[in-house]
Length: 349
Image (cartoon, rainbow, N blue to C red; front, side, top):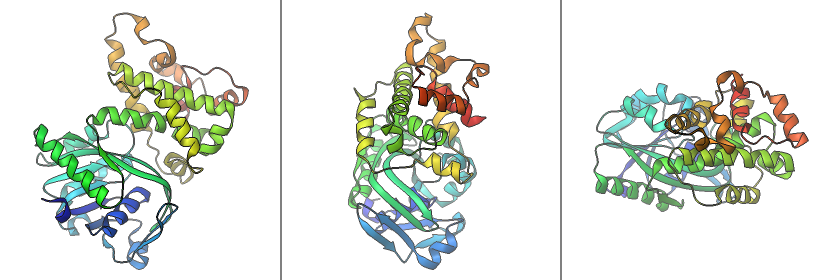
């Protein structure tokens, strides 16, 4: 089906789903929104995006639904809910999917497609969408968009050969570009997810632990060094798993973040609102993945340096509490090799 005639479903209309859904609808696409807590507000007042890039955007006529069973079959389904909801949302995704539907997970972390795939029909295509965007939900039906917005797509699994997979990715890219959103197809979804994890693992966890936004984290020399160390750990983990990331990715991300508006990552908002945090996808799955190649190493020296502490036993991971990490940031102590596990252990305690 040509991209101009596709029916699009948005599963999860918070900051991400609200922004991209509104942009696609403004571009003339047939967009249908599955809402739960936002339903009353959106049906009464429409969907609004207050953007520092595009200005004030309003979608008055929103095709909104409380139940997936009420939605028309959709050719594309963009899942923008948090990864913590995927298993519960799977029946709704299947219900809203047309035969041969393309499901795109606009989510953070690793392993999210692997976990959802068994819950989908065999005829459904599964893709990953990597969003580079600064946005948050201000109130029901209102999204604040501070900066960026690009979406990179990669094919995961489904009933398609290599040529068909590329066509599907190209079709998805074209949907976003027609809406004025920068988009690129990624040859390796797994590598792309590791690349995004470099930023997410550092800034999401540290924003919660240190109660700080991106500008504060980078302005202080000690917390900036913690950010750098976590990023370097993720780089090393990706390498151990067989994924080579672009040269100097950590420094480039630090520079890019410094140029962004002051931003509070999604995990910070989830923590403040007492919502489940995406600890599994952003921390637990990467830790599990990095252990597998290590177990196959013939010599211990093959996994040393910044990433060595990823292999610490659980009893060691709780040694660094949030207070210790804060003290470490203030005193400028060397946290190389333990910063990632400090984040994970404290956030789970």
